[in-house]
Amino acid sequence: MDIAGILGIVLGFAIMIIAIALEGTVGLYWSLSSVFITIGGAFAALMVNFPWKQVASIGKLTVIAFSKDDNNESEIIRTLVEFAESSRREGLLALEDKVQNTDDEFLKKGIQLVVDGTDAELVRSILEIELAFLEERHAEGQRLFEQFGAYAPAFGMIGTLIGLIAMLGELDDPSQVGSGMAIALITTLYGAVIANSVLLPIAGRLRGKTAKEILLKEVMIEGILSIQAGENPRIVEEKLKAFLSPNHREVPARRGVAPGTVSGAEGVMSDAS
Image 1 (cartoon, helix red, strand yellow):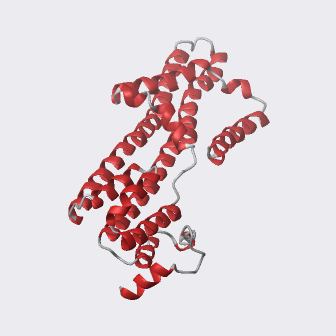
Image 2: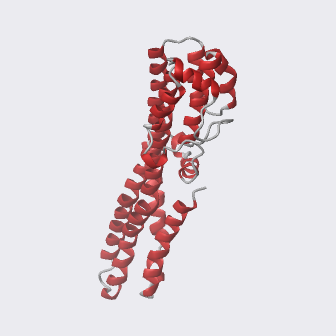
Image 3: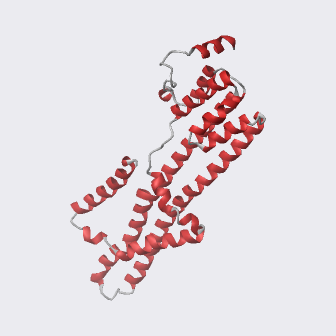
């Protein structure tokens, strides 16, 4: 779990509560009916806009948004370089058993296509189609929170209008106008706070996670095609590291190979290439 993200939300609410408390008017900012109109109304609109299956996934998507990433670009590159070494030494068929040790289904599928002798262009096409649909599936979750974040302020405004209408009906008592106006505006405040402190940031986190996963998949596609082409493992490594920012290009030493050294078999192959 990414504690920083959760702390960010908690800190945002804490700052607002402290600021309100300093004015000594905390009770004035609480209204159960405003919560009901803002969140309940926005959720109802969400149910109209999206299939229930998507709406019901809000909890799961929230957990995903605040979970730590399991994938590591450097580890993926190291794995692909190891596969490149094995294929150069033992042939592509040797990868069929090795790829079973990885949990990534995308990588397994790509390597299996290569082992099966699929044409390189067809391999790229299949993997890019799968990547495009993965991006679209993830975008659905982002849109869910973005729409939720758009509906919350809208229903906050609706709640304010309801409050204003009720207040105007009590104009015969001028002493109630001030408090009535304050209560009417609370729903607008709730909508803005919920949207900008919770819903839209979660959509942003999901978008960032998707971008990182797409980058990893693109690294895998290039690595798989380089392995199929029989490229030198060193070239494969340098090509894949180009996907990373300069401060993330340090790839862990490959299993059984000390940092900065080249195995004998790899050295012979480097000379032969």
